[in-house]
Amino acid sequence: MTVEIRGPHFVQSFERGLAVLRAFDADHQQLTLSEVGRACGMTRATARRFLLTLADLGYVHTDGRLFRLTPRVLELGYSYLAGFTLPEIAEPHLEQLVAQVRESSSLCVLDGDDIVYVARVPTRRIMSAAITVGTRFPAHLTSVGRVMLADLPDDGIDAWLDRADLRPNTSQTLTSPRALRAELVRVRRQGYALVDQELEEGLRSVAAPVRDRDGTVVAGVNIAVHAGRNSVESVRRDLLPHLLATVARIEADLWITGPARAVSHGNGNGAATGPSRG
Image: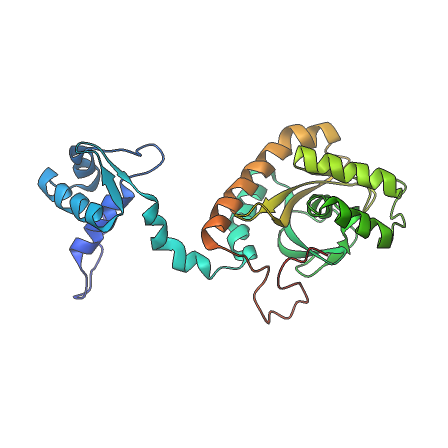
């Protein structure tokens, strides 16, 4: 049995108060005094004092019998999260996604008419070009670019199409302005984009938009796979649900932090320091 050594500065009552807060979780959103006491290894009377103190401070609400946390507990982590850049918020979620699907995933922002990689968790190399943070591609050739372009207003899409260089990268690349506009409308409606070998032969990718608390798309997350191992149907069936769940978790964290910065200032990698609506 490991015994934790506490310094003379240690305030045990503070530790016990934090234990009371941690007793609540997704499976125990409402608890009685006795349940909190059992979960924290303290008497009912002690649990009552902690809970009523937390209620006085606004972190707990009670109807007289059951206790539950209030949204004010989010303040406890706000200062920490508020200092995070968007990649720092997203990276743990990307790592979890990659562990689930065993395929590479990236977070990108829109900078002018290009997408810029600002976070990436690779598995195996599937492209001829090495991708690192700061890598840029024309937005319309990528799934992550299309979910961000699709968020532009209709006149913004028209303005982009008027200036876009639509030269093909592969035989599969969409080069018709009319076809691309229809595709962006479809992406906007369905909430994700799937690009099949338009950036590079043998590469398929699926992406979903990351929205801030105002509903504006500030980034996109993708999963990139080898076309020989993954059909379009399997990407939709097996990968898209994991991708959408990951984006939801990123958004939940992002909405706590407020306006997101794409990358830390002065990182020297050439990536954008904030999303550009181009």
